[in-house]
Amino acid sequence: MIPDFNYAPFVWSSYAIAAAIIGWQVVQPWLAHRALRRELREDHLAEQLEQANDA
Amino acid sequence: MIWTTLKVGFHKLGTPQVFYRLSSLLPPWLWAGFGVCAAIGVYQALYVVPPDYQQGDSFRILYVHVPAAWQAMATYVVMAVLAMIALVWRIRVAEIMAMVSAPIGAAMTLLCLATGSIWGRPMWGTWWAWDARLTSMLVLLFVYLGIMALYAAYDDHRKGARVACILILVGLINIPIIHFSVEWWTTLHQGATIRFFGESTMHPSMMPPLVWMTVAFKFLYAAALLTRARNELLRQDRSRNWVKLLMLKST
Amino acid sequence: MTARPILALFKRDLRLAARHAGQSLLPLVFLFAVLILIPLGVGPGPNLLAVMAPGMVWVAALLSGLLALEHLFRPDLEDGTLEQWWVGDTSVLAIVMVRFVSHWLITGLPVILIAPLAAQMLYLPPHAVPTLMLSLLLGTALLTLFGGLVAALTLGTQRGGVLLAILIFPLIVPVLIFGAGATAVVADGLSAQAHLGLLTALLVLALTLVPLATVSALRLNIE
Image 1 (spheres, helix red, strand yellow):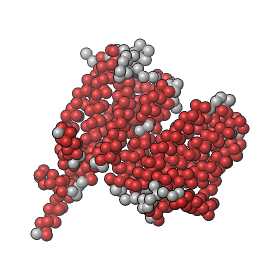
Image 2 (cartoon, each protein chain N blue to C red):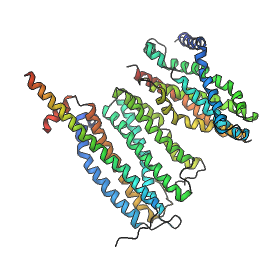
Image 3 (cartoon, each protein chain N blue to C red):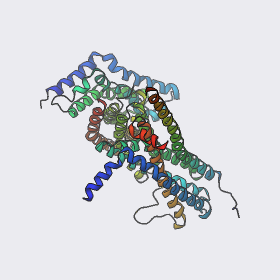
Image 4 (cartoon, helix red, strand yellow):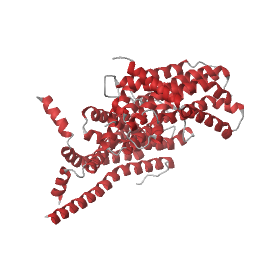
């Protein structure tokens, strides 16, 4: 059922590099968004605390 | 009447809030499109298409190399259009999208160069050749890196983006040079076999995975562009009211 | 619009360069330094050096040209005179073009005049020297134009410097390929018509588009 792999190692390394580069394009925005969300949440909480203290 | 609605819609699209919603709603579908097309494309490329009678199986690198090359150039053209819009109408969202396209384009160019180099070893016997196509592609990588470096060197994001947009338009000349390099010079790299209009000289049995992979890369670019642009917009606007409102609503 | 302000600016640029003659000629010294490093690096064999001569003289000329680009607009930005360019009725485009011309006279022309000596140092065949000088004439003009544009683009950064070199690199690649190529084919006994023709076409294109782009870039950076 699983075909016999005798493709040159060149093909596999090309597809591996493609997977790595494309994978980074998928992952980086998601990671950056998570970090941004965390920062924004902290800023927001800090502001709320300030407002509560001023009041 | 339609013209006014189009113009208003165009400018509304440039407002941060509308763009934020667009760039939150669209990407999941675009990623899904990418996933499906890439899965079909890779499966066909590796298992369905028969081996080439001359090159054996190493020609399968074509199915990542060529879509990456096409996307590297297409990204630049889209980036140039965005740069024109940014310079003429001064729409900030267009500036952001242009700046954010550069790393994606650089990645595509890098992928094209890397896979091309690996393919060159079995096909031509060399990892690299200083011929017109390869050299102009390498120059394209430096153009992308230059745009990223120029934007990063400015503290004022808007000024940096607009200066970088001028650079993008100056570098646009490189794209026709890359495209026609195989016609204008005798090169090691093969000439065009796939034509948009008219007969392509590639065997029809080899075409389907190429089409699937090309479409997959388009989805990839669109998804990456919108997600990166959304992040950059949030980063730049973190102290603005609309972001604070967003934070209030989400808690 | 009188020509007097433009002429005054032109004479000022030249006078300043003459006053700081040492500084203006430093890029030339650097050019020779590069040319000396080559035989020290690859060995003094005349055959090898003769083959490399066109490209090497060109690379040395480009590298030394990069040094002078920093001073094209930055001094004016720093002392505030750049903003004055938009005040008054002289067109900024004319001012920029005059700046390009004076810069080329100060940096490009000496390179062309010194080219025969550089060619001799690397054993370039004498019959190729006129082509070398002609190609450098076109090349230094293009370097001034592209360099000026990139200098204007990087004005708002801390120090142009290396960023300037990286940004100008893609633009200067075709210039180098055709310029050095023209000299090399003539050294081999063939005609350089195609190379020089393309270089001239590139120069004409740059002359029409680059000053406009430079004015926009400067405008962005004075805010």
